[in-house]
Length: 514
Image (cartoon, rainbow, N blue to C red; front, side, top):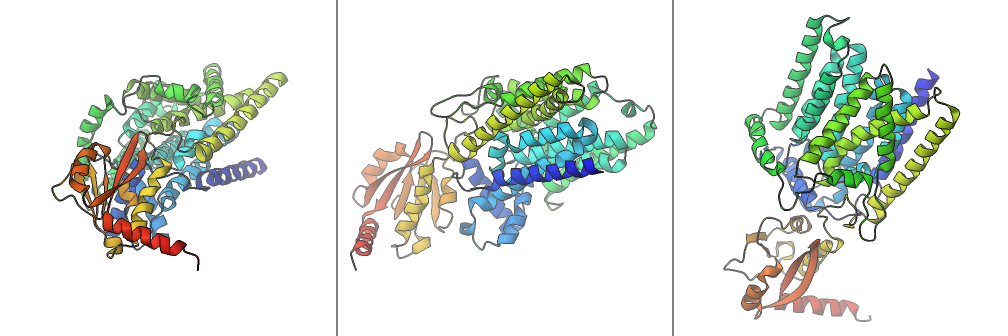
């Protein structure tokens, strides 16, 4: 009893530490373009109460449903009332809860391995960083942990409830992101290779096992369909989800923006050094995971350990083979590596090992945790916008907030205030996150190219239109400089002469001594 209470208390402490790391200074990084798109989808769901699944973009709606309680508590009246923290908070909370649910793994892996895994995940740089991101990946990995943990519990108890819970977790994964099929497929493959006596019908009636498996499958499909269809109000989302694999498979071959070599993820995990940043590495986790794999091979009764090792290898192989890569996709393989690392660390420090092995193992774990905690601080609180970090990807530059400041300063002296007309001229749809920084304004127009009727009090434009805009606006507007948007992407600012004159006069009056 005492050991169980100590185990639960340790998990609570680690969950609290994880919560702090994931919520402290949650607005210390500008919104990524993807985050800003999701924020608009969230507001659409919150304001209309309805979500329409798009098979070509955005993934499933679980991210938005998870964030709804935060908005319900805040009760924003306009989208302008939303903040980055409002959107990110739900993901941060789930990222911390992720540590707590590891108690599910205790019967299969042992409490020591679970506590070490939980400690590693608490200070894992990629897990902390992307738990502070308003994207789906943390929810997907949380679902993965639930799926495997509930399956482990079922393997011990053979109770229908755990089978249904595992099916529900799989359904939430499917409704979160289409790549869930890779994770679920890798786990099923690992379970098929390493099968237990209970799962083959020995000691348990085959009929009961089949009914339990059928129940899990029906639950998975039902939960996914329910969430994707906006709880039955948009049944067309179910066939649309099946259609989604066509565009996503095409993208899997890679695009100019997201095509990376096969060793992209391993380079992130083993050794990454660029620019003025530190050496980013999850080497402590990888080394301990190697010991975990060795322990799974040499131990006689290591069914779940062997499954986790094969699951991790399969995930890394598939993600490495697919040309289309984004850094947050590394989170699912990192989960497998961390679980294997927990197994390896527990094996090294077990009472069965010689004392010198236990000492060396403890030293390795301690040094690894210290280095990982340092990297987590550097990644999320020092280099959170630095392209030198392997986890910073097409990140909005800090200067981008000047778009909002400039527009608000000019609107303050315009007769229409927030109804002032603003035009954004861009060659494609990649002007995000500008709509987030202009969300308080009611009359913002987004144009592909330069429209016939160009003049507006304020114009934000791609620099490629400089010559055209100079010719058409130089008599009435001032080219007011450039504002950074993303790495190597800037926005040109054009302001109406009269508006700029009024703004300067107002500033001069406010600066005169009283």
